[in-house]
Length: 213
Image (cartoon, rainbow, N blue to C red; front, side, top):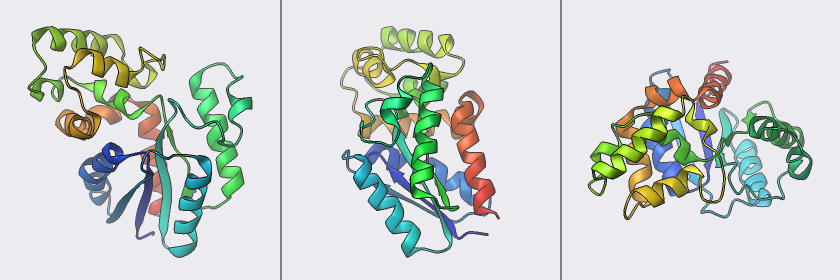
């Protein structure tokens, strides 16, 4: 059994989400050392590679994974150009993750790229949105329409104006990702994300299985 899991996170919001939601989830599974490290928005592959390999070399009893967005993923990630020729975002992400895994080659490493971005996970329930002071009746109605439309919110598309983060900024006055993101997810509950987001759920299951070996 491994001591814990280290997460290479895209930014502060993901760090908060991991520490407020995923930490408790894994502790309930008997995995106690859960840490998130902020890439500071500079998620170039060279920095990603350096961070991952540094932790793998330094720590011998932890799993290393990542939580970064596919939306605007840096083009220097291994296999990026070839993957973008594939049909469907899931196939593209899977191909990139495979190339990253092949390059780093370590049994304690689980690459993960979020489809399409962290904000998609917020559209699993209305509870979190209803707690935001600037969400008036009109905003809540628009948000509910999106929640009801996407049974799997991971599939909300990544267009420059229709990506989950763009929708939130357009609908919620003063929406601030670091301020609201992890709070909305916490209010919605991790269970709602796990139930509605199969790719995210599969990632957690892989991490748990590897950590408990």
